[in-house]
Image 1 (cartoon, rainbow, N blue to C red):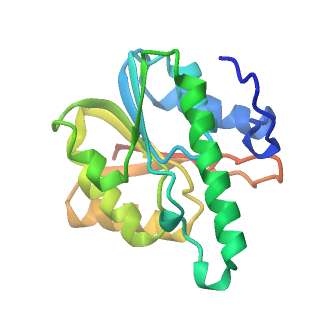
Image 2 (cartoon, rainbow, N blue to C red; image 1 turned 180 degrees about the vertical axis):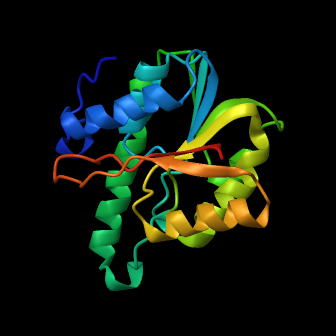
Length: 205
């Protein structure tokens, strides 16, 4: 996929050992040639990884690219900082849309996670990858609304298992809903030029 005419350093993907470890984790734990969805796209690094490693029949990408959903305190930011960040977020959105514009296998939905979940029938996806909000409530809500959309035998996973809020939300969700599954994960330190490997999937106990 070409990225012609884009000259933004913060959009560049990095190819290093830690990202290769993420690729291996995804390749080893998510189904090939299937129908999947990524919740939380941002710059599209992992979207490319999912597509390249899994060759999905259909890959849905959900993100609203809205500054109000970013976990920052905008009260501490100046108007110029908010405007600059909003412009950067919109640039990222345009970049991702341009990246996939010629690929019919990839469908982008500009929406918040919960609203987007209502667009799909239950038992629809072979895999669901969650990487949107990282607060306890947002993770728990994403699990609640998206888990029913997973086919029996499908794979539910995501990113940032090194965040305590993510870890606790997953644990509480499984316990509260009496789901007999446990977490398999990869945890490595995060370098400045990498998003590291903190992926997770649910597997049978």
